[in-house]
Length: 311
Image (cartoon, rainbow, N blue to C red; front, side, top):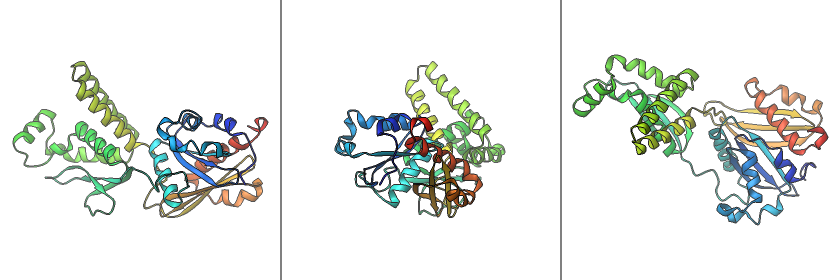
Protein backbone atom coordinates (compact mmCIF):
# COMPACT_ATOMS: atom_id res chain seq x y z
CA UNK A 1 0.00 0.00 0.00
CA UNK A 2 1.07 3.61 -0.50
CA UNK A 3 2.29 5.68 2.43
CA UNK A 4 -0.69 7.31 4.15
CA UNK A 5 -0.44 11.06 3.76
CA UNK A 6 -1.78 14.07 1.99
CA UNK A 7 -4.61 14.06 -0.53
CA UNK A 8 -3.16 14.26 -4.03
CA UNK A 9 -4.10 17.94 -4.68
CA UNK A 10 -2.38 19.02 -1.46
CA UNK A 11 0.73 16.99 -2.35
CA UNK A 12 0.84 18.55 -5.81
CA UNK A 13 0.73 22.02 -4.27
CA UNK A 14 3.86 21.18 -2.27
CA UNK A 15 5.94 20.17 -5.27
CA UNK A 16 8.80 22.57 -6.03
CA UNK A 17 8.90 24.64 -9.21
CA UNK A 18 12.18 22.94 -10.16
CA UNK A 19 13.36 20.27 -12.61
CA UNK A 20 12.82 16.68 -11.64
CA UNK A 21 11.09 13.34 -12.11
CA UNK A 22 7.64 12.46 -10.79
CA UNK A 23 5.90 9.17 -10.22
CA UNK A 24 2.21 8.33 -9.75
CA UNK A 25 0.99 5.36 -7.68
CA UNK A 26 -2.45 3.83 -7.29
CA UNK A 27 -4.17 2.92 -4.03
CA UNK A 28 -2.37 -0.44 -3.98
CA UNK A 29 1.07 1.15 -4.32
CA UNK A 30 1.53 0.14 -7.95
CA UNK A 31 3.46 2.61 -10.10
CA UNK A 32 1.19 3.98 -12.81
CA UNK A 33 3.43 6.41 -14.62
CA UNK A 34 6.87 8.07 -14.54
CA UNK A 35 7.53 11.45 -16.15
CA UNK A 36 9.93 14.37 -16.07
CA UNK A 37 9.47 18.10 -15.88
CA UNK A 38 11.32 21.39 -16.01
CA UNK A 39 8.85 22.62 -13.37
CA UNK A 40 7.52 19.76 -11.26
CA UNK A 41 4.58 21.61 -9.73
CA UNK A 42 3.30 23.00 -13.04
CA UNK A 43 3.73 19.74 -14.94
CA UNK A 44 2.08 17.49 -12.36
CA UNK A 45 -0.78 19.94 -11.84
CA UNK A 46 -1.45 19.83 -15.59
CA UNK A 47 -2.74 16.24 -15.30
CA UNK A 48 -5.89 17.64 -13.74
CA UNK A 49 -6.34 19.99 -16.71
CA UNK A 50 -7.39 19.37 -20.31
CA UNK A 51 -4.56 16.94 -21.17
CA UNK A 52 -4.93 17.96 -24.83
CA UNK A 53 -1.55 16.54 -25.85
CA UNK A 54 -1.83 13.52 -23.53
CA UNK A 55 -5.42 12.37 -23.98
CA UNK A 56 -4.44 8.73 -23.53
CA UNK A 57 -3.70 9.49 -19.85
CA UNK A 58 -7.20 10.73 -18.97
CA UNK A 59 -8.28 7.28 -17.77
CA UNK A 60 -5.20 7.06 -15.55
CA UNK A 61 -5.75 10.28 -13.59
CA UNK A 62 -8.69 9.06 -11.42
CA UNK A 63 -6.50 6.15 -10.29
CA UNK A 64 -3.72 8.34 -8.90
CA UNK A 65 -3.56 7.92 -5.12
CA UNK A 66 -0.07 9.26 -4.42
CA UNK A 67 2.53 11.53 -6.01
CA UNK A 68 6.26 11.04 -5.49
CA UNK A 69 9.05 13.19 -6.91
CA UNK A 70 12.81 13.63 -7.14
CA UNK A 71 14.35 17.07 -7.57
CA UNK A 72 17.23 17.15 -10.07
CA UNK A 73 20.00 19.64 -10.68
CA UNK A 74 18.88 20.37 -14.25
CA UNK A 75 16.36 19.41 -16.92
CA UNK A 76 19.07 17.34 -18.60
CA UNK A 77 19.60 15.39 -15.38
CA UNK A 78 15.84 14.88 -15.07
CA UNK A 79 15.73 13.57 -18.66
CA UNK A 80 18.47 11.03 -17.89
CA UNK A 81 16.83 9.93 -14.64
CA UNK A 82 13.48 9.39 -16.37
CA UNK A 83 15.20 7.36 -19.08
CA UNK A 84 17.13 5.22 -16.59
CA UNK A 85 14.06 4.47 -14.50
CA UNK A 86 11.96 3.56 -17.53
CA UNK A 87 14.66 1.34 -18.98
CA UNK A 88 14.79 -0.51 -15.66
CA UNK A 89 11.02 -0.92 -15.31
CA UNK A 90 8.26 0.53 -17.51
CA UNK A 91 4.92 1.27 -15.79
CA UNK A 92 1.71 0.39 -17.61
CA UNK A 93 0.76 3.94 -18.62
CA UNK A 94 4.15 4.86 -20.07
CA UNK A 95 4.24 4.28 -23.81
CA UNK A 96 7.93 3.53 -24.26
CA UNK A 97 10.82 2.06 -22.30
CA UNK A 98 13.51 4.73 -22.10
CA UNK A 99 13.02 7.94 -24.02
CA UNK A 100 12.91 9.51 -27.45
CA UNK A 101 16.26 11.32 -27.24
CA UNK A 102 19.33 9.60 -28.67
CA UNK A 103 22.35 9.30 -26.31
CA UNK A 104 25.50 10.80 -27.86
CA UNK A 105 28.98 11.97 -26.92
CA UNK A 106 31.02 14.96 -28.05
CA UNK A 107 34.49 14.16 -29.36
CA UNK A 108 37.20 16.81 -29.06
CA UNK A 109 39.94 16.34 -31.69
CA UNK A 110 43.06 18.45 -30.97
CA UNK A 111 44.85 17.35 -34.18
CA UNK A 112 46.70 19.96 -36.25
CA UNK A 113 44.70 19.20 -39.40
CA UNK A 114 41.41 18.02 -37.90
CA UNK A 115 40.89 20.14 -34.79
CA UNK A 116 37.25 20.44 -33.85
CA UNK A 117 34.21 18.94 -32.20
CA UNK A 118 32.08 16.12 -33.60
CA UNK A 119 29.15 13.96 -32.48
CA UNK A 120 29.79 10.29 -31.60
CA UNK A 121 26.96 7.83 -31.02
CA UNK A 122 26.99 5.14 -28.33
CA UNK A 123 28.97 2.12 -29.43
CA UNK A 124 31.06 3.96 -31.99
CA UNK A 125 34.82 3.85 -31.62
CA UNK A 126 36.52 7.22 -31.64
CA UNK A 127 39.89 8.78 -30.93
CA UNK A 128 40.35 11.98 -28.99
CA UNK A 129 38.69 13.10 -25.77
CA UNK A 130 35.04 12.08 -25.29
CA UNK A 131 32.55 14.06 -23.20
CA UNK A 132 29.08 12.97 -22.18
CA UNK A 133 26.88 11.09 -22.57
CA UNK A 134 24.26 13.67 -23.50
CA UNK A 135 20.63 13.10 -24.47
CA UNK A 136 19.30 14.48 -27.74
CA UNK A 137 21.30 14.30 -30.94
CA UNK A 138 19.75 17.49 -32.37
CA UNK A 139 20.37 19.51 -29.20
CA UNK A 140 23.95 18.34 -28.99
CA UNK A 141 24.58 19.17 -32.64
CA UNK A 142 23.28 22.68 -31.96
CA UNK A 143 25.58 22.90 -28.92
CA UNK A 144 28.57 21.87 -31.05
CA UNK A 145 27.56 24.52 -33.59
CA UNK A 146 27.50 27.09 -30.78
CA UNK A 147 31.00 26.16 -29.65
CA UNK A 148 32.35 26.29 -33.20
CA UNK A 149 30.71 29.68 -33.64
CA UNK A 150 32.27 31.07 -30.46
CA UNK A 151 35.65 29.32 -30.39
CA UNK A 152 36.34 28.87 -34.14
CA UNK A 153 38.45 25.82 -33.31
CA UNK A 154 37.85 24.27 -36.74
CA UNK A 155 39.66 27.23 -38.35
CA UNK A 156 42.81 26.86 -36.25
CA UNK A 157 44.18 23.89 -38.19
CA UNK A 158 47.32 23.73 -40.30
CA UNK A 159 47.26 24.04 -44.07
CA UNK A 160 43.86 25.72 -44.54
CA UNK A 161 43.11 26.86 -48.07
CA UNK A 162 40.39 28.70 -49.94
CA UNK A 163 37.29 29.75 -48.05
CA UNK A 164 38.50 28.06 -44.84
CA UNK A 165 41.67 30.19 -44.86
CA UNK A 166 39.56 33.31 -45.54
CA UNK A 167 37.24 32.44 -42.66
CA UNK A 168 40.21 31.92 -40.34
CA UNK A 169 41.44 35.43 -41.18
CA UNK A 170 37.98 36.92 -40.62
CA UNK A 171 37.69 35.22 -37.23
CA UNK A 172 41.24 36.05 -36.21
CA UNK A 173 42.40 32.50 -35.51
CA UNK A 174 45.53 30.66 -36.62
CA UNK A 175 47.43 27.46 -35.76
CA UNK A 176 49.42 29.26 -33.07
CA UNK A 177 46.27 29.63 -30.99
CA UNK A 178 45.02 26.08 -31.47
CA UNK A 179 46.23 24.72 -28.12
CA UNK A 180 44.54 27.56 -26.27
CA UNK A 181 41.25 26.97 -28.10
CA UNK A 182 41.42 23.21 -27.45
CA UNK A 183 42.00 23.88 -23.74
CA UNK A 184 39.07 26.30 -23.67
CA UNK A 185 36.75 23.79 -25.36
CA UNK A 186 37.85 21.07 -22.95
CA UNK A 187 37.30 23.17 -19.83
CA UNK A 188 33.90 24.28 -21.10
CA UNK A 189 32.82 20.67 -21.65
CA UNK A 190 34.08 19.98 -18.13
CA UNK A 191 31.60 22.68 -17.03
CA UNK A 192 34.14 25.25 -15.82
CA UNK A 193 31.91 28.16 -14.68
CA UNK A 194 34.22 30.94 -15.90
CA UNK A 195 34.61 29.49 -19.40
CA UNK A 196 30.89 28.69 -19.66
CA UNK A 197 30.08 32.29 -18.68
CA UNK A 198 32.53 33.71 -21.22
CA UNK A 199 31.16 31.63 -24.11
CA UNK A 200 27.59 32.39 -23.05
CA UNK A 201 28.36 36.12 -23.04
CA UNK A 202 29.94 35.86 -26.49
CA UNK A 203 26.92 34.04 -27.94
CA UNK A 204 24.50 36.55 -26.40
CA UNK A 205 26.54 39.38 -27.94
CA UNK A 206 26.45 37.69 -31.35
CA UNK A 207 22.69 37.03 -31.06
CA UNK A 208 21.90 40.62 -30.08
CA UNK A 209 24.19 41.95 -32.81
CA UNK A 210 22.39 39.86 -35.42
CA UNK A 211 19.00 41.06 -34.17
CA UNK A 212 20.16 44.70 -34.26
CA UNK A 213 21.24 44.17 -37.88
CA UNK A 214 17.74 42.75 -38.62
CA UNK A 215 19.22 39.31 -39.26
CA UNK A 216 16.43 37.64 -37.34
CA UNK A 217 16.94 34.14 -38.72
CA UNK A 218 20.60 34.27 -37.64
CA UNK A 219 19.60 35.61 -34.22
CA UNK A 220 17.04 32.82 -33.85
CA UNK A 221 19.60 30.19 -34.80
CA UNK A 222 22.10 31.55 -32.26
CA UNK A 223 19.40 31.52 -29.57
CA UNK A 224 18.73 27.83 -30.33
CA UNK A 225 22.47 27.13 -30.12
CA UNK A 226 22.70 29.00 -26.83
CA UNK A 227 19.87 26.97 -25.30
CA UNK A 228 21.49 23.75 -26.55
CA UNK A 229 24.84 24.70 -25.03
CA UNK A 230 23.10 25.28 -21.68
CA UNK A 231 21.64 21.74 -21.96
CA UNK A 232 25.12 20.27 -22.52
CA UNK A 233 26.89 22.17 -19.71
CA UNK A 234 24.08 21.75 -17.15
CA UNK A 235 24.96 19.59 -14.12
CA UNK A 236 24.11 15.92 -14.67
CA UNK A 237 25.31 13.05 -12.44
CA UNK A 238 22.65 10.34 -12.75
CA UNK A 239 24.35 8.87 -15.81
CA UNK A 240 28.14 8.69 -15.65
CA UNK A 241 29.53 5.56 -17.36
CA UNK A 242 32.69 5.35 -15.23
CA UNK A 243 31.03 5.98 -11.86
CA UNK A 244 30.46 2.33 -10.82
CA UNK A 245 27.86 1.17 -8.30
CA UNK A 246 26.47 2.87 -5.21
CA UNK A 247 23.45 2.93 -2.90
CA UNK A 248 22.28 6.37 -1.77
CA UNK A 249 19.95 6.94 1.17
CA UNK A 250 18.43 9.94 2.87
CA UNK A 251 16.00 10.18 5.78
CA UNK A 252 13.58 12.89 6.84
CA UNK A 253 10.23 13.05 8.62
CA UNK A 254 9.87 9.30 9.06
CA UNK A 255 10.74 8.35 5.46
CA UNK A 256 13.86 6.76 4.02
CA UNK A 257 14.47 7.41 0.33
CA UNK A 258 16.91 5.10 -1.45
CA UNK A 259 18.50 5.33 -4.90
CA UNK A 260 20.51 2.56 -6.52
CA UNK A 261 23.29 3.32 -9.01
CA UNK A 262 24.40 0.48 -11.27
CA UNK A 263 27.30 0.87 -13.74
CA UNK A 264 27.13 4.62 -13.32
CA UNK A 265 23.37 4.92 -13.90
CA UNK A 266 20.89 5.82 -11.19
CA UNK A 267 18.30 3.18 -12.07
CA UNK A 268 16.10 2.54 -9.01
CA UNK A 269 14.27 4.80 -6.58
CA UNK A 270 12.23 3.69 -3.57
CA UNK A 271 10.97 5.06 -0.27
CA UNK A 272 9.69 3.51 2.94
CA UNK A 273 8.45 4.61 6.32
CA UNK A 274 10.95 3.94 9.12
CA UNK A 275 12.57 5.47 12.17
CA UNK A 276 15.71 7.55 11.92
CA UNK A 277 17.69 4.91 13.81
CA UNK A 278 16.58 2.21 11.35
CA UNK A 279 17.81 4.33 8.43
CA UNK A 280 21.04 5.56 10.06
CA UNK A 281 23.40 2.88 8.74
CA UNK A 282 22.25 3.33 5.13
CA UNK A 283 22.39 7.11 5.39
CA UNK A 284 25.90 7.03 6.82
CA UNK A 285 27.03 4.68 4.03
CA UNK A 286 25.90 7.12 1.34
CA UNK A 287 28.90 8.58 -0.57
CA UNK A 288 29.49 12.17 0.61
CA UNK A 289 29.13 13.54 -2.92
CA UNK A 290 25.53 12.25 -2.97
CA UNK A 291 24.53 13.06 0.62
CA UNK A 292 22.87 16.42 -0.14
CA UNK A 293 20.94 14.94 -3.10
CA UNK A 294 19.66 12.03 -1.00
CA UNK A 295 18.74 14.19 2.00
CA UNK A 296 16.99 16.85 -0.05
CA UNK A 297 14.83 14.27 -1.78
CA UNK A 298 14.03 12.58 1.52
CA UNK A 299 12.82 15.97 2.76
CA UNK A 300 10.68 16.31 -0.35
CA UNK A 301 9.22 12.82 0.15
CA UNK A 302 8.31 13.69 3.72
CA UNK A 303 6.74 16.98 2.61
CA UNK A 304 4.56 15.17 0.08
CA UNK A 305 3.20 12.74 2.68
CA UNK A 306 3.15 14.65 5.98
CA UNK A 307 0.27 16.46 7.59
CA UNK A 308 0.17 20.28 7.34
CA UNK A 309 1.48 20.59 10.91
CA UNK A 310 4.62 18.64 9.99
CA UNK A 311 5.33 20.31 6.65
